[in-house]
View 1 (tube, rainbow, N blue to C red):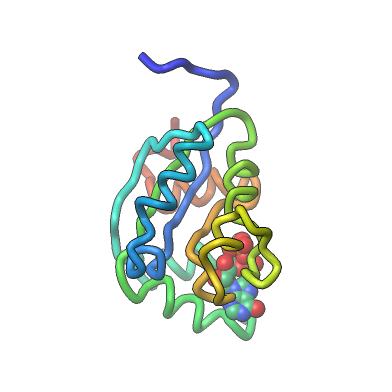
View 2 (cartoon, rainbow, N blue to C red):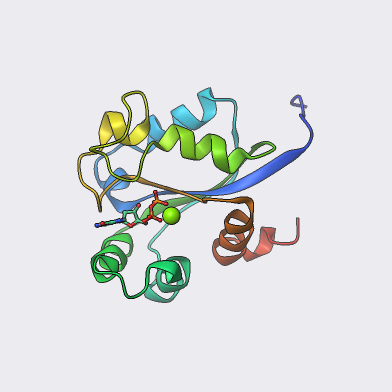
Length: 145
Ligand code: IDP
Ligand code: MG
């Protein structure tokens, strides 16, 4: 049985279609695991228009919204729930780096491996509240845990 730290928390991680297409799933999951975080759910799936629009509802109406939804639904993504200590969402965001790869620090996923603002490889929930909402959207069977 693995060592359990308390309090635990969970966040939603998406390796976006560009990550799967570029063959970076192993590299990216390796970074998550080497950090000491654990996968509690993971599935390769094509995200539907309906789920994409609910996931990105905060961006509806922005100039990049249509391109974003087209991108996130174009081929399979690796959708996962990651578990670790309190504020795991923040740990994952730190590993991801800034949204814009031009501003992401070397050593981060986007700083090392991305160069496009839209195709920036990863999504991670941006707060504990977002994590709970997004886990319920993508993995309803985990929502009450
Ligand atoms: P985040 O993924 O770092 O949380 P958000 O601001 O929530 O960043 O934006 C969601 C996603 O929308 C980004 O990861 C990126 O794929 C895309 N995006 C954000 N801003 C722009 C933009 O100005 N142009 C094109 N795509 C954008
Ligand atoms: Mg966001």
